[in-house]
Image 1 (cartoon, rainbow, N blue to C red):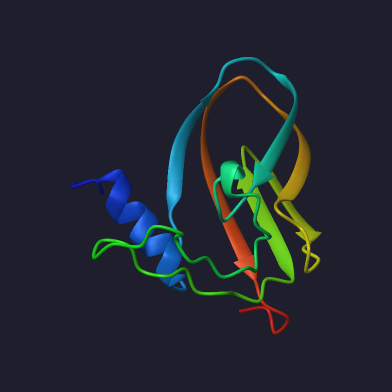
Image 2 (cartoon, rainbow, N blue to C red; image 1 turned 60 degrees about the horizontal axis):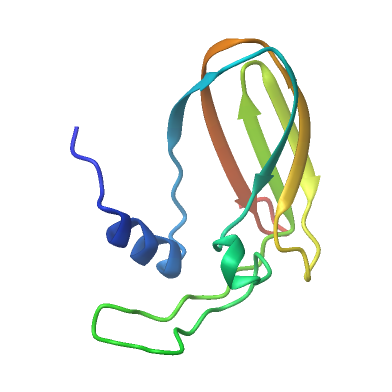
Length: 115
């Protein structure tokens, strides 16, 4: 399977398609974990729902479309949690207990209609 280059992934995030994927992860040790689901890199300091315009645009940089997330979901190692997303939230935080070993990680942002 072909993987996307980092710049292609960022372009997809900016377009905000209704898409999803699964990541294979290895939980190093059993225990309590804090997992934060963000749309934008932490360095941008933007809310999940915000649009983004690059301050130094070029032909490779498309503007980031705003979304209307009202809820976030995390599924990993038998854990399936949902948390609300407020307008100013920069990420959705999940506090989970995970067993050691391989797991599949999947995440979602849902709008107010559950889409």
